[in-house]
Image (cartoon, rainbow, N blue to C red):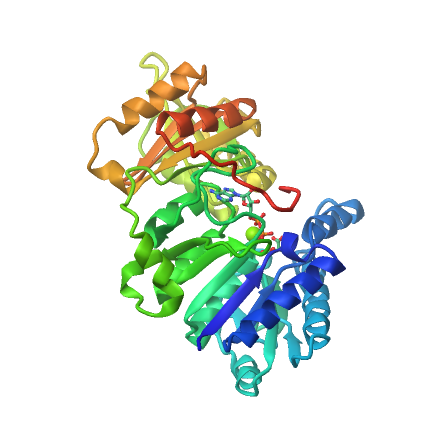
Length: 432
Ligand code: ADP
Ligand code: ASP
Ligand code: MG
């Protein structure tokens, strides 16, 4: 008997029939003798629809109100799921993030979880009942206001609840069979990864593989929570993310010990369409300019990713600095840079949201020469021009034109022999 936290994503609970199907799966887990705490996302594309609705009211909705609006999505699914589980003869109770003891900071829209005090969840489990928790939300105890954790935040709720309850495993149920070597929606020949480490999963998630939210992986690594990403539409084994799978001795992990897969050189290719590029043209190439520019950008609240500075033309002593950031942070960041135009003395400011980022990830990169050469060769053969490059010990990322991104992903995936024999099934979801 184990304590299992199960998280069901939006595509797994998109309508009444899916909610009943998920309830049956929870009942199955209870019948197998396990304690279950469930974290649930909003139904289908509800969060996007609520965002669309808000933007029809105003271009700049107050953050506090937007968070209250978005938390409504998970309240609908949690209560319906509790009803569905109850109708199967199990006692089930739903809880908002606040009721579940998910404490966050005060940053509306992308709050960090600072603590989890899951007394009510523990009590519920001790009575043999199923606890169902709204994902993606918490409470800022200072203002006593509800907050949301950023897109994909239900994954983080699930891992945080698992850590708070010291659960044996956190299962992330989604619309694909696990984490693949690339997004199956773009690369149908992508292969399922049997197990991977927190480090590789961190790079994949940070590079845009939205199957698992980045903060959820960070949280799992910090508290050493084993995460099992799997489909709610099949019973096949998914992808296990741990520090060292073989360490786990209980039955649950037997499949992964037996699989004993040799660590590959490359674990996968990720892509990201959500970023934009700002170029500050003709900025004086003197000490302190980059420091001042990025101070202004940081104060605007933007999380920048890649940075490139051109070699300055000697005759002019001017240079160009380009950086990428989440597309949504574009307007406020541009305003902030425009406000200090005289101080920075640049000539022009450009904004480009037609970019895509492609990343190759693999721990084996550290010790195998030639990975970069093969990577750039594949992009050349696919006719893809590279606009920016950044690397870490286990990742190479490039920025390309957005319309070439899918072809580039497939070309790199093939060049590194990642294609499998079977077609990677996408069971549901709109990919939104
Ligand atoms: P959920 O609603 O269950 O949270 P998400 O849409 O957030 O589901 O995440 C699942 C989706 O992530 C898949 O449908 C797939 O298109 C996408 N995805 C991107 N990269 C990968 C990858 N490497 N492996 C699996 N899925 C991926
Ligand atoms: N419903 C939220 C979103 O769509 C949180 C989540 O599903 O993880 O981002
Ligand atoms: Mg998700």
